[in-house]
Structures are given as structure tokens and as C-alpha cells.
Amino acid sequence: MTTAEYDFDLLVIGAGSGGVRAARTAAAQGVRVGIIEDRYWGGTCVNVGCVPKKLYSYAAHFAQDFADAAGYGWQLEKTPSFHWPQLRDARATEIQRLNGIYNKLLDQSGVQRIHGRGRVLGPHQVAVGEQVFRAERLLLATGAWPFIPDFEGADLCIDSNQIFDLAEFPQRFLVYGGGYIAVEFASIFHGLGAETTLVYRGEQILRGFDQEIAAFTQAQIAQTGVQLALKEEITRIERQATGLLVTLSSGRQLEVDQVLCATGRRGHTEGLGLETVGIEVNAAGEIPVDEHFCTSVPSIYALGDVTGGPQLTPVALAEAMVLVHNLYSGQAPKKMDYQSIPTAVFCHPNIGTVGLSEEAARAQYAGVRVFVTEFKPMRNTLSGNPGRCMMKLIVDAASDRVVGCHVVGSDAGEIVQGIGIAVKAGLTKADFDATLGIHPTSAEELVTLRQVTRS
Ligand code: NDP
Image (cartoon, rainbow, N blue to C red; front, side, top):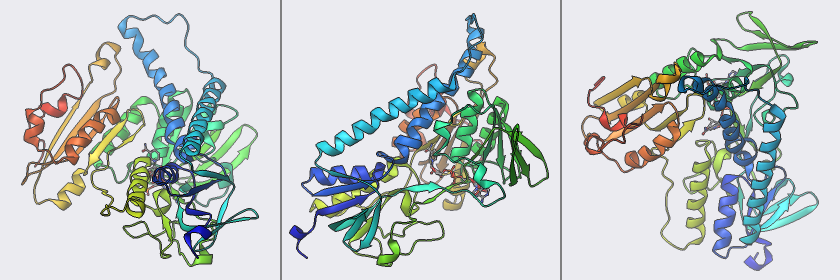
């Protein structure tokens, strides 16, 4: 088949962060691109992930701000009350606006948008309903989908796709899981006024994070008023006249209005037709790819959450840029760099982190120096807010390089984005020490830490 006989040079399935970025950057280089999407233009991030979650997180923060205000002399005439439909609908309007922008950007860059569900028919063919499109290369960017474990009454749970549009605000809210989504939504619904319980099967939430940071965050979240039910699993949920009766593995029962299952996300590959081309997915539904994002079929590529790497928007965006560069720029190929990816968890308080946890650094380096500080932020003095802040630097003792930075506190993500540059650049503790602080801020602690906590 010659190039002219193809409908597209590149046909992308999935218009999320990775798919849209690949489509637009390829089209900008004169590549004939089509993109197929049946549901969420802009993907999880824009529709049912990062963006609406952050809006709800902002909303939830007001509760603490109102409480803090009195210590600073503000008298609130009336107890503030929260109106869920107003927030929900304002969010929907904002997301609609963003969808419009995404579509406009795709149209302006010359990408052909195809509405429908794409199903792979062959190495160069995709069906959308009755239509069949042919392309020189296919890119699978279908993302991930919430996974709900099997237990009696699991169908009574909602997942993170459904949480944003609830008809009614759940006054009693239960979150199942101890990862990113669970802790973020526990904080959000608690902040918005729900009596909130987080049920997690382990002893300490946020497995995989620096353990000291996870322990501190857990204590801070509990201090805000979220109830933690640890070393517990949900064994059954039953609908009752007054709510959902949840039974835990210990036998404990509690009645709530909604159960959010935040127990991980799996590759969104069901119904994608991969079996027709012999692409095998793993147990988590993820598509294996090589370092060039190529699947076992040479004309089919995949990137983003569906490939099982770090499930983060900036990772998918960066992967898309690398792929398009390598396929179409004619320049020397690039390799995606997965080292020192900064990330934030928008629980209350926030976590910002970049580089290695203390545990990972100890495994990787012969010697590490660890600097930890834990303090009451200045903002919490007059307000009487008991929330505390933790900052932690991990240094490779041999090279003096800062290999990890972790912050728990207000705007931790904003702080760590900057520190991410320093860690990526391989700066040393001496460079941190030579940097003057911005006074008075919490973040200045990161350049004034002199006392080694552990080595
Ligand atoms: P995570 O992998 O972060 O957490 C999943 C949680 O569910 C873990 O606590 C896990 O426990 C628990 N779990 C898994 N399987 C079961 C089971 N069968 N029964 C009971 N509990 C179970 O996934 P999330 O769903 O929270 O989020 C998915 C991904 O999305 C994240 O990993 C992250 O990459 C991304 N994300 C990023 C955000 C950000 O950047 N701020 C925000 C939200 C999501 P255990 O630890 O014991 O395995």
C-alpha cells in the first residue's frame, strides 16, 4: 500500500493528554492525522481527573480558610454554608469551555476529529462504527479506566469518573483505597462538609511514597477530621432505606451515602480489538511497548496510561513529544527520561515530591544524608490551625547531590515544581545551602536545612 492510499499518516485512538499532544505536534509537521474519541475530548485529565479534581480541591480548602479567619480578626456574620449543585454545575461549565478549546486546537492544527469508538481491525485499519479508516501508523492512547475489586455489592460503589456529577452531596462519604485518588477525594469531601471515612487495606496510606512523608501525611489527614479505617477491606455493601451499609473485613459496619472506589486504574483496552493484530495486554490490561513506544506490531504505537508507566498527564505529554519527534522530525531520535518526575498529591495538606524516597535512595546509594524539618507554618500561628508542615531533602553522601525532595504542606506542588529543576539539574546540597531564602516563607526551610537528621 502506498502512502497516498492511506486515509491518514497517523491515526490516534483516544483524545486524552497523550493522544491530543501527539496528534497536534504531528499535524504541525505536515503529517496527516486523524484522532478518534467517543467520550472525553481532552481525556481523563480534563474531564474526570486533574482539572475538575483541582477545582473541587480549591472549593474544599475554603472550609479551613473560614475557620482560620477568626484568628486574624475576621468575624463571619453567618456560618458559611456549601451549595454542592452550584460547585458541580460551575465545574461542568468550565470543563465544557475547556473541551471547546481542545477541539478548536485540534481543528486549527488540521487534525481530523472522528467521533466514535475506535476498534483495531488490522495493522493499518481501524473501524469506527461502520466506517473503516486506513493509516500508515496507529497510535493507541486510550488511557486507563478505574478498577473496582470484586466484592458483594461492588456495583453500588461509584468510581472517579462518576464522582464529579453526583446529583446529591453525600453527607456520609466513604473512600476505598489509600492511593492518590483516595486521599485527594477524602480531603475534598471532608472539606466540603461530608463526614468522611477512608478505608485502606494496609497499615499506612500512600504506599510507594517516602514512608516518613506518608506517615506524616496520614497523621495530618486524620488531624483534619477524616476517619481512617486501616487494615480493613470492604467485604459487602448493601442498600438500605437510609443509605449504604458497608461491612468491613473486621466485621465493623458503617452506613454511608456514597462509596467511592479508588483502587487503582487499569489499561483501557477492552473492546479495542487488539486480539485481531496479536497484541497481548498484561493482567492490568496494559499494552507493552519498547522504548520507542512501539507495540509488538511495527505499525502500531502506544503511550500514556495505557502502557502502564507513571499515570501522570505530564508523562503522557512528554512521551507524545518524543514519539512524534522520533517518527517525523528526521532528526536524531530522543529517549524519554523517566528520572526525577515531580508530582503532587492534592490531599489536605498537599504533598509535593520529586526524586527518590529515603528508602529508594538507601537502596541505590552507599551513603545518604537525610535532612528533615517539621514545623507549624506561620499562617497557622494566629489562626490556631493545628496543621503542620514537613520538608525533607535526601542527599547522596558521595556526590552531595540532592536526589530527593518531599514537602507536605500548603501549596507543596507549587514549591516542589521549582525544586524539581534543581534536582533534575543534579544540584548539590552545597548549591541549596548557597541559595538565599525568601523570607518569611515555609519554602525557605529547603535552603536553610543544615542539621543532618540521619545519615
Ligand atoms: P493508586 O495506585 O495510587 O492507589 C490504589 C489504591 O488502591 C492503593 O492504596 C491500593 O492498595 C488500593 N488497592 C488496589 N487494589 C485493591 C484491592 N483489590 N482491594 C483493596 N484495595 C486495593 O491508584 P488511584 O486509583 O488512586 O490512582 C490511579 C493513578 O492515577 C495514580 O497512581 C496516579 O498515577 C494517577 N493520579 C495522579 C494524581 C496526581 O498526580 N495528583 C491524582 C489522581 C490520580 P496498596 O497500596 O495496598 O496496593
